[in-house]
Image (cartoon, rainbow, N blue to C red; front, side):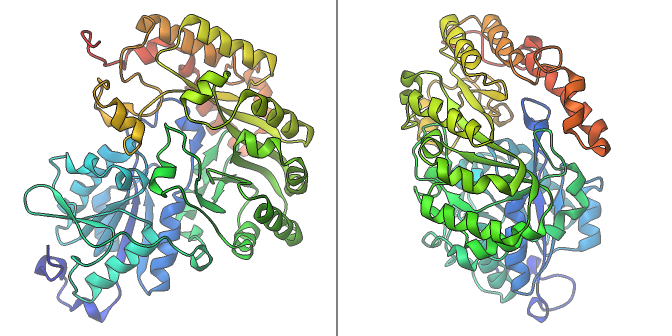
Length: 494
C-alpha cells in the first residue's frame, strides 16, 4: 500500500503543512465483567508513553479510554478530526473490541489511517489477520513509541511505508505482509515521561485491588525468565531494560498516592534497584499505597533491599506469581524456582512489613487431591489475599503453539484465564465447584473470612459506592453457575 493514496490526504490541504492529529484508543474488551477484571482497571500507560513521544515530534494527540468514555466513536472522530488512529490491542481479549473500533472509525471517516498495535497483536497478529474486518492500514509489531513516530513521519511527508521497520501492511489478498527488519529496542533513558494529563478525565475510574484512583508506573520493561504461560519474555526476546532513576523519580513525584508498578520483574537487578530506591527516598515523596510484582526467588534473597524500599509507602504490597504449591507444579510451568523459595519470600516480605498477595494457576488436569493440596498450602501459610487463574495457552506463547490441537474453544473472549478451553480431568460441574470453593477461601468472600464491612476502613469514603459495586460483582467468582453458563467446550471433545 502506497502512502501517497489520496484517501489519506483530505480536508483540502497538503498534509506537510501541519503536524498530524492522532487519536489513541484503549478498547473495552468483552470479558471485563468476569474474573478479577473489576479489581484491575488501570490507565493505558503504553498509550501515554506513545502520546509523549508523538507530542515531542509536534503531533497533536488525544487518548480515549473506551472503558469509561461516554461519547460514541463517531462523535469523538467528528470532534477531533484525527488523520491517524492508533488502537491498543494489549490483550487477546481486546481483539473483538479493536475490530469493532476499526469499523466505527472508518465508518465515521474512511480517510483516517488506522494502525493497531500492542503486546497481544504484536505477539500474535494472526488474531487480526484471521478476521474478515477491513480497514486496518497497518499492524505495529514492536514498541509503539518508535513505530508510531516513524509512521507519522512517513505519512506526514508522503513517503512509502514499505521500508519502515516492524510493520505489517495489507497485501491486497486479504492478508498482511511484513515490511523492513524489526525496530531496535528503545534506549530507555530517551523515553519521554508518560502523558498522564491525557487520561485525567478518566482518573477517578482507575482501580487496583481496593484502591482508587490508582496511577501506574513502569521502571523496567521486559523479563528474562521463561514461564511457559507468559508471552512477555517472548515478545521482548528475553531482554530486561530499565528507565533511568532520575526519570522515575520525576514521575514518582508528580503522580498520586496510590501506585501500581506494572513491571513484570521488580527488583530484578539488586544494584540498580538499590540505586533507584535511594533516588526515590531522596525525593521526599511518600505514598499511601504501592504494589509491585516480583518473583519469590528475588525477594527471598534480598531482605536488605526490601527494607530500603519499605518507607516509600504507608502500605506496600508485593504481588507474587506463586503459581503452584508443589515443586512438580512449578517445574511443569517452567518457573525456575522451588517451594522453599516461596516460603522464604513470604517470610521475608512479612518480616519487612510488606503485604503479601499473589496468584495460583489451576490446571484443568487437577484432581480433587490437587485442589485439597492447594487449600492446605494456603491455610498453612495464611495466603488469603490471592487469586486463581485457569491455565490458559495465550496466543503468542510457545505453549499456545504446543496446545493448538488440544484447544476446543477459539473465541478470544474466553481467553481471560477464567474459562476452560478444553475438557478438564474432573467432570465439568465438579471442577467449577472446587474452583469456586478455592475462591471462597480468600478475603474476597464477603460472607467468609473477611466480611464486607471490614473493607470499609481500607476505602476512601468517597470511593465506598464504586468499591461496593466491585465487591458485589466479585462474588460471581464463587458461583459455579456463572462459569457453567459460559462453558463452551463441545460435548464430544476429548
